[in-house]
Length: 331
Image (tube, rainbow, N blue to C red):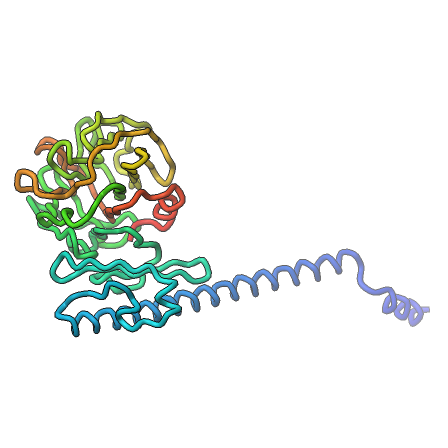
């Protein structure tokens, strides 16, 4: 009788509970495999992008050596293969000495770029970027256009991404002044500014970024509300106001041809207007000063707090690009 019972049990197969357990285990193993595969694939894509960027950069630099420092107008001029040349975004500026460039590549929906002064492949885009101050250990523009001179005393601080010495603290009487006339080489029919900011106090006017000389001037500043002005138009106050002690990503995007002006906070559009036709000239010397980071209009409007990853583009960024900048975080 006992032998018959055992035989019957052996031929009954799995119970529903046992089958469910097997299915769950298979699903878990599949998920682990997919995650592992995705991670391996992504690392391979990034490695490939970094390698191609490095090889292309070497050819651009070799061309410059052979042509008395002049950068190639196109990647094809530097002998870069046709496929890479057609897929890359390459911008060269021979208006400064030495010249500046940025190089951007996309593969499998991942985009990385390098600049002449920052040849480590960095996630994100540089299309239209004419100046970039990462503010990591120094105050120089790594695009090579805007320069950077310390006025007053700045102190290093942790960046918006937590990086040690990845930002600078502005004490209310300090700023970074840009290189004279660097903006004269560009038409700013479109312009965008981006910065990560952390305010240390409230109740005053605190300038983030500006180009002096009304009406050739724009700024990001705060007076308990976000305030923006461009081309001499009346300033616009926007909510929500900045939270003291919190890192915030702020961006404006301006298209003179439309005209349109959009202000973003933490990747979200907070204000849009029809703007005015304004000017297309910025960052040229006015009163001996081409532009500042950490100040606006006068000495009573210095920034008090930390600034990180300041960028200037000579095109109007799209909402998707602003969201990408925010999601990638400070560099």
